[in-house]
Length: 322
Image (cartoon, rainbow, N blue to C red):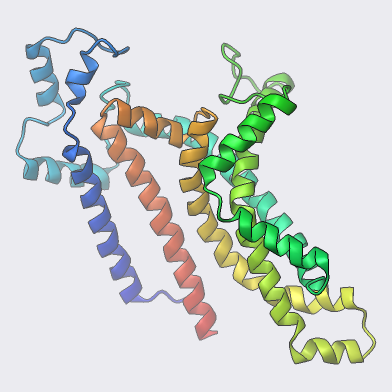
């Protein structure tokens, strides 16, 4: 597998630009995190004096000129030390990794189900493109793809609350239930993950369906499909033995890109269902004006997004060469 130097340099420059924006954006927020913590609404720290606030400024390096803060920020990124959270008083990396497992679990689960359903229904709809089933399924999923994720989330939340009361509509685990590798606990976690996972599936599934349907229609209209049919092979054999093999290749790249897209979608979905993942953590960091935690979360998301995008482009380049 060959990797273009220009591609690597382009992504390095893009990474540098994005992390610079990541440094600037939190500091454009007018609210002071320590004044917020000393307000009546704070839970972790209350009643901070001016001297205590000054000491916190010194500890977090916010008293230094902006350029010095930026150099320290770059150093911390490349050394893996993202500092301490202002609101949670824990290392940023520890907080992120304690929440990311929740997000990854629903993202990978929903992606797996989405790909499978997209392939199956895409093939069926393509095969029946001339009848009512093929036309109406296509129209339905095109319409569904235009609905914003938060509306889909609220819709599923309402349906779950009224019609499936056995499913939890908030949280990742029942309050005060101790996490253990036991059947009852794992089942409880699974129940809490069903609605957020279902939301991500509904949000992303139409794209896979339309992509697979379009690719299968193109393959079915190619000459080799007619030749195989003339030889006496039935439609199902041609579809799954030849057409699917050629149509499924673009789904590999699309699946990689969907990981980052679903991660972005989970930021909204987790807040709808109060799921304890990165999206929920991001909201808490914004409300607490927690600069180090905000920067850590965005850096994490940027690394995943750019990393997946780079791998996808490498795969595309090697497919062209091949």
